[in-house]
Length: 633
Image (tube, rainbow, N blue to C red; front, top):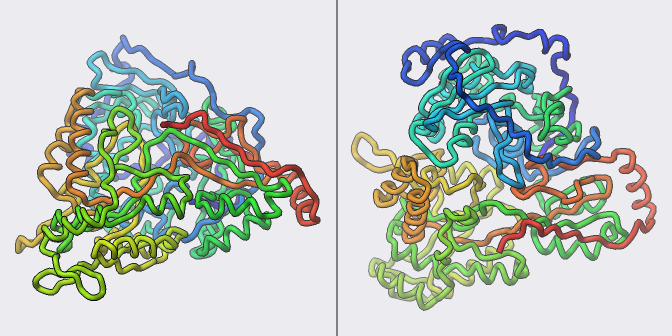
């Protein structure tokens, strides 16, 4: 999470305007790939476009940024660790920092209005659908640029398929996605393309409009050494910020700097956003230290979701004298699945009765009531917050020593040792390693350990630095881990987290081994779950997809490889008065202020306010602001 400061010098407006797409590197290997797959890659002329297309531009939707926003300044933030790699795709790339560097800092052909979810333009200015609903046509913005100054053209969309399908990228999920979920692409000219669907789907235009470009100029050296050669390189995006090499200082800071004359500044839905010139992420490993830095005014904003910070702020001078404002913003988004993930490829976690017993041994409600002071809510299953696609009848299994011991007994663990841990007839103790990161959450580990022991289960705990933990889990070397994935989209996408293809691979001797560097960290590999996941991906009917979604969720719950923990109904931050926000603070689908970049800095006010605070002056009454327009039940 986060960014830093420096000024990016791009091509001047004159040079950029004169740059022709033909000047951009063309990878001969990609060209060969296109020729080898004529069923997917098509080349035509503008005169070949259907004459009856009804072009749209989404102009009727309302802007959601604030025209009063000011440009400039450096936002001072913190992060707890440097990401293991800066590379966007491949091993260890799916880390927490990628949200700042890429996910909230890049655009597809189309976007979704964050309040209404209606389609709005992205890198395409206009779009049209074929009458049969199988092809979408796009006119690209000729002014759009990557952060390295290169123009975004049709060839960058063709290159997306070549790059992600390549074995050099070492990214199985992307290879599968860009093979199965797309039917083809046609280039008419440098700024006109058509994207074809593999089948009819609900909301087809937004499926096809979700295609991103890939900067082929940046990948001119793409080859077998990609994973190492590009490990610490920032891939140019179409967003407003870049990370220059000198601004990526491992274990010290990361600075994201704004592109000069960013193309989005001239476009509706993108102007008056991403207003600060730089975002500075100081690496602070201890969250308590970061909190103290915030209270001194050396950080402009910080998440304070943990109750001891949220309520503890009330006793500080910064809050009591009216300088530091607390904000709770309720959003309406899919809920990240926070919980304990059981690696069922490890015995005896491959025994469902053991997993059922563990479900009843983990007292997350106690954590919610005590550690989180009742402010969080119990998560009931893996896929919550997807509207009609979520089966709300599924409930988390309750904490119950009785039910836990009954389940463990079915698995053969019936003898209670003097240490309170159950054993089976072979003398094996019911004991597992629970892996946590070293965040504030590690402070409720003792409660989980105590609760589990009452059920005859021993949880041995390890608290690892975030990047170290990430690597261990992605290598599938854990027993159990506390984890959460980002959640987004209209409906659950469970192939990556629960399909066998992402869980196991067989050696030449037939031995099953974990498939590393995938998002299936439970090792789920049940053909009964695979079948409806495959059917869901192939379905063309929305009602059928909803039924399949419910069925998959029920099967995932029955497998019991995930212990649901809690959900956050929004986010909480503290910020100083020189950081400004729109009247409604944020938008419906935002999971933090960075998602849409609507805030701005009053740099002149910063010096005055900070000097007054350090002089002991009172600014006003303590202020807590609650924004609950988008609160869900």
